[in-house]
Structures are given as C-alpha cells and as structure tokens.
Length: 397
Image (cartoon, rainbow, N blue to C red):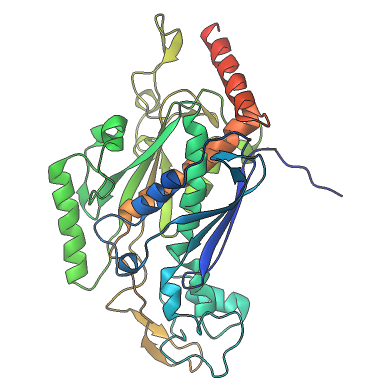
C-alpha cells in the first residue's frame, strides 16, 4: 500500500560532525525559485557567529556546493542537493573513515565516558556500542549547518511572497533583552552578521557578554533564550482540523528538534498561563484603510486555533546549558563501569546566536511547507499567483 502525504516541502540531512561533509536534499521547491550560492553562504556564516562560540568555528569556513536541482540560478522543480565540506575532517580521516582501520583508533578518539545531558549514554545503550563516538558524531549540533542551508532555500521562497524570518537573543543566563525588541524586526535585520548578540539594547548586550565570559572563566556553560519572528505570513497557514496539522504544534516540534532546546513558547505562552483570560488574548479590530483585521497586541504569537492570524509569528526557545563541560561532571566508563569524569570534546560556552539562526531555518522550513500545501503549483509563478489571489479574497472579505 502506498502511503500518501501532503505535497509540500521536505528535507533530509546526512553526515557526521567530523566526517567528510554534511549533505542535505530539499524536495518540493517549485521551479523558478532564484537561488544564489552567496545567499546560502551568508546564512551559514551567520550560524558560525556570536559571542560564546568555541574553537571549531575557527577551523571551519562553511560554504555550500549545489550538486543538483538548480540551473542558471533557478530551481528546476527537482530535488535540490547541497553539500557542506567539513574542513576539520582532515584531522579525523582514520577515526571517521568508511573502511575499518588496520589498528583500532587511539584511546583519545574513543569515547567510553558518556557526558551527562548528552546523547552519549542513551545512544550507546540503544545501539549496543561501547564507543559513544558512534552516537555523538551525529548527535552533534554540527548537523544544524545542513538545516541552515535548507532553511536558506525556504527563506528565498518565502521572500517571494513577502514573508521575512529573523531572530533575536532574548537572554543569556540572568541577562535579559527588553521585550520591546520583539517588534523591531527591521532593526534586527539591520544588525551586522558578526554582532556578538542579536539584541538591540546595548546594556543587555553587555550583560549577556559578561554572563558568557563568567561561565567560560568558571569552566562552565550557560543557558539562554532566543526568539524567532516571522513577518508577512498570510492568515490561514496551518489547520484546526487535525492535531498534526496545527501550526503551533509543528513549529514546536521543529524548534524542539534543535540540540539543547528544551522548551518552546508561542507568543506569551509562558506569561499568560499564570494570568486571567481577559489579559491573555488579543482584541480584534478592523482597519478600514488597509481593509484587514488588526490586533493592538500579539500575545498569541501570530497563531490562533493552529493557524496563522496575520500577525507576526513569534516563538521563544529556551536553550539549556551545553552538556560538554571543561570541568566535567561525574560519569561511569561504558566498558569498565568504573566511575570517571565525563569525556570532554571541543565545545561552545553558549551558541545562542547560532541557535537563533538554526531556529530561523526551522521556522522558515515549516512555513514554506505550509505555503506550498496551501498555494501549490509546480512553478514559482503559480504559487505567487495563488497567494496573490488569496490576498485579494481576504481584502474583499
């Protein structure tokens, strides 16, 4: 029996942290979408930035190779294949080789002391291996570079419909950015790609940097929060009909799939849970000039009943402190069962800016999928025409 699915956008990544490359295949893009390598590379570079990153980012210089699905700067309507080479693989060719080496890898590359909070132990038990490197190489957040490349394509498609996706650093440790920054999308878009934090308030940025530096000096990591914002999505993306088509559920799942993200709130979901209903919802008004329904507030984060309502889509993601610590926590050796300190790998103090860029990619991929489900079309022109017709219908509602 052939199982049918909604026709939209989907992607699949492959590759390990220290393997030769990361690969991603994106299927479902209509033909005619303008694709420039520079636009994808910019997103990859943004993912490498931010105060709190570790030594790996000094080695890599992520750049994409397009191996299929694009001709003369435009998609063909066939799957798009992208590759990102791992420069650090040159130091790991034997350890990560496809063929078994003549001698086992040295003890410095074999991981038998799982890190609390990482996938090491659970994955080793699941797959019956005493070398957690079999697990951590794929569980590594390095994989998210492939997602960012795929998300760059989704962003390009969304931009053709007037939808823009960005992010901000909402907090690092106890340092918080003002909530007012959530609506300053144009200012966030104007931030330099190498800004230490994606926040607009100088005092908040300084406090966040200080929190990172304090954690690094203590041989520790620190957690934080980032917010993803999408402006321009038309009302009605998503569905109220089935649980797996509700947009807030899909966004929550996509964002929670980012390594170290342990909680997601749509809009003011955390704050409104402790208050009254009269203060939790967004009053509705009608703008006669723009011929559209408007809201003075956006506590719902742009989603009601599992669907976009025309306001800015807002999702706040909470990043736990990373589990690889210079001052390792107690652990147990997988082979001997003796107590040891956990293994250490090269790591970040906090990748909060990078996590926001990955969050942008995941939100863009979900929204692009919903756009293609709703407006269909084999060619970009068909998608745009259907979108514009829908906008006209809304204006005459």
